[in-house]
Amino acid sequence: MGFGLGVSPDQRAVETKIDEEMYGLVTQLTNEITWLMRERGLTRADLAARMGVSPGRVSQILGGGENLTLRTLAALSTALDAHFDIGLSSLKVDDTYTQSAAEAADAPNHHSVPRAQHQRNARNSGAPRRR
Image (cartoon, rainbow, N blue to C red):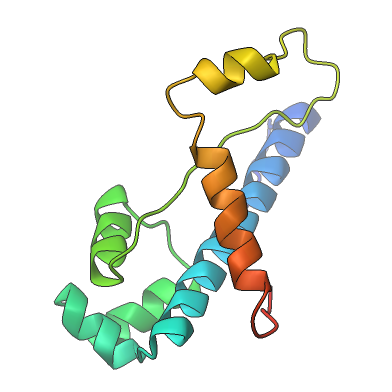
């Protein structure tokens, strides 16, 4: 991202962190999609046909150079007969609020963390995965 005149060093630092986070998200997303395609024996052309888009569009998506919409993510998950697990966690160690194990068990989404961990473990038990 280009920084214009009058942009504070603090704003530059924030923009840099945003860019780094976005790059990490894109990398994780494309790795997950590519891994699932490989697991299911799907080519980019197969995925394109399932999504109703051109193979070139799938290449754009997997190239990671664009900001994907939620609709595109929904189309990907539908075409792959899968769903995305989304989690958000604090980077700070000294949070003032920490959820107890009992509170976590009672939370509506208490199953998402173990399921995601189970999925990662299942994936890692097979062929090596490139990240």
